[in-house]
Picture 1 (cartoon, helix red, strand yellow):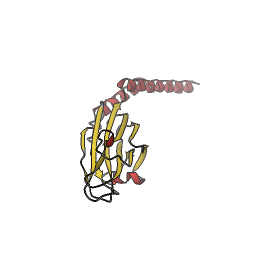
Picture 2: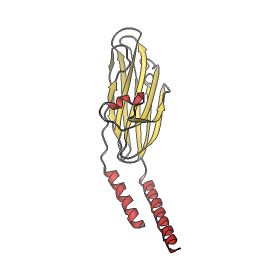
Picture 3: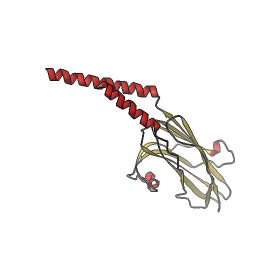
Picture 4: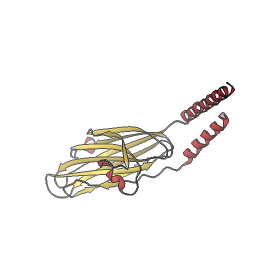
Length: 211
């Protein structure tokens, strides 16, 4: 019984480890902006499992018209992980590294578990039933979150910021996402514990049957 259970758990771990990581798709929105703005995002890396990964995104919002207008932007990053692991994400005001950038008026980062498809994830911030909020931090000039991720689950990372400025002025964010898989040794240890629990349960059933 215990050998069968251990073998099954080992095969499950192999299958999860062999699943390909899903590439990151970035969607942008200027929801709530009352002036013409231009986004100039750049990104590198991928949010992926298995293995350590690092994803970075730099986003700059430049005012195109007017003076004293307000602009804001939201970035949505949906992704799926192939095995259990941990995620930490930090977003900071571009003004911290670029003195010419205007300081942000607000900055937010949130992580959702996401069960929708298409563009429905854009409604996560307004309490959509498709999303469950896992972590949230609205503290500028730097906000950060961390969470444990489950294999096969869809997630949505949502970053938003806003500022007021004149034509030609700009502000923005730097986002860094790091992922760390659960060490294989820990998975083996958990499997062993489950196996021992199965053996103990089988012995208890045998004793009860004899009694």
